[in-house]
Length: 221
Image (cartoon, rainbow, N blue to C red):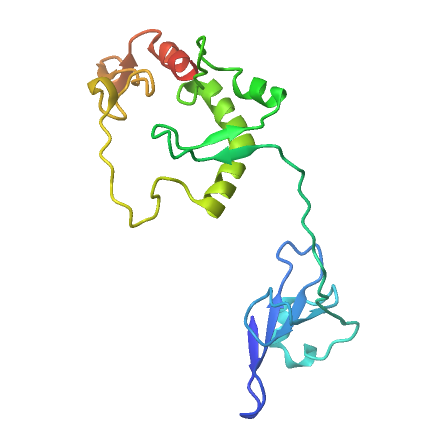
């Protein structure tokens, strides 16, 4: 609910807002403000008595209240602390196939990041597309690398134009497989067929025995 105090032309409008406690486990709050926002830092907060109900505002006899406590917002100096990180991010100009490089990860971070990898002798291939293990890898990568990469991109920019006005780049799918149609990345669902049950007189869905189990294992792997 809201009431407006207009006053004269020289006076500033004041708004009286009622912010009820919807679950009725605490008192309601009245907000006196120069705006219609409950979060206005210049407003005055008035805590109403616990036995007061929003419907009492419709009765003029209940407009005079006692035991109302008022308070104002107090400005505070807020400081943000963050741990020192040795992670360094760069976008090498001389390496056209590399978007960013991330250095300075701890050994424990690398172990967590590469625990589900398919590694070879010279490179590490992170599993980010197959099943539940890929979700674990993505979560670790987000917690370790995404914030430094975004910080670097905001301060220095990347060598690729990622603005909304940048031109579109034509990307050809590898090995002629259409994007979104790779059976390894997106396993196909089991095929189902509708069969009419003569005894029950109803249509039922049927699939190949064990197909759901094989589909679940494909998603997990």
